[in-house]
Image (spheres, rainbow, N blue to C red):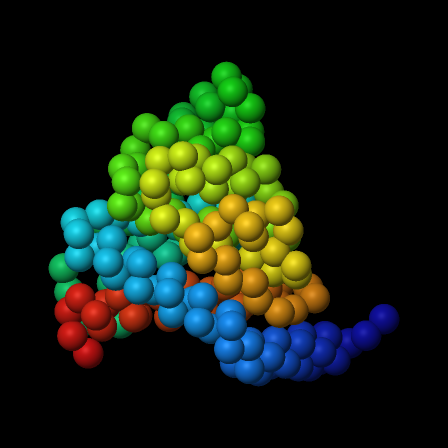
Length: 195
């Protein structure tokens, strides 16, 4: 059994290597840049962002929504954002009546309008409820962003902007997702409220 220090060193090394690899992936960085531009355009047009994920990615969705509504790095007006992971009555009603794979798509059908933005977060790209949400976005004309890992799974071709990050472990992929989320919010803040 490895010691906690060896485990930490191994995890730090994996995180650093994945981040360095992402910095070299110009195609992925270009997709991220386009996703940021789409989000800025949505906000400039009076729209909002909806965010969803499962497990740790659900927590990331809530984390990012809070930063849009409150702030990330500077005092500014709130930006409308909602994590689709937080209302237990809605989640359990949809899950019970329609199935768990519909918990995000049905919320989008009831809340989103064309021109809003949806951000789905799934480390595997295989979460059925994220797949259904991306399909719902296509049907409604809601641009979609995907933060995922590994090969992007079946979610990749369903998203308008699929950002597939490197990393073998789920934890490493999630660490990159939070860097992307912070950078997305910071970029939106700078574009809408100045540097």
